[in-house]
Amino acid sequence: MPEKQVLVVDDVPFNPVEWGRSKILVGPGSNGAEHIRVGVTEYDPDTPHEPHSHPGQEEVIWVLSGKGYTETHGEKKDLSPGSVAYIPSGMEHKTAAVGGKMTAIIIKGPVNDSGGVVS
Image 1: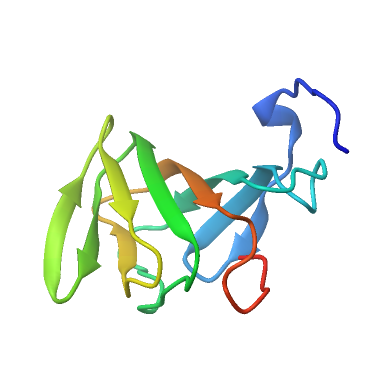
Image 2: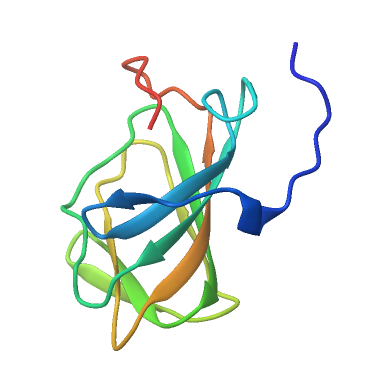
């Protein structure tokens, strides 16, 4: 069973992803959390990730800085600091920054999608 931990976000390194860079703060690969995954993603401007879904896994995108959008079913919703987007399990979506970097906290639960993949 994982134990309580306190970490300093700036001490956790980012890893490159196609749309910017990301780091996992809480999750199976970082501290052994079994039911939730929390990370920070910096989206590069105008480089959306491909539309995708997380079957069996919900996602929350909480924007800290910058501007962007999230898109589902061809409908774009603007994102800015203080915006929180909720993506239901299995819903196809994509997210991107506009005009500069956008930084967001990403929360997913459970940590494995219905295919058993940690995403």
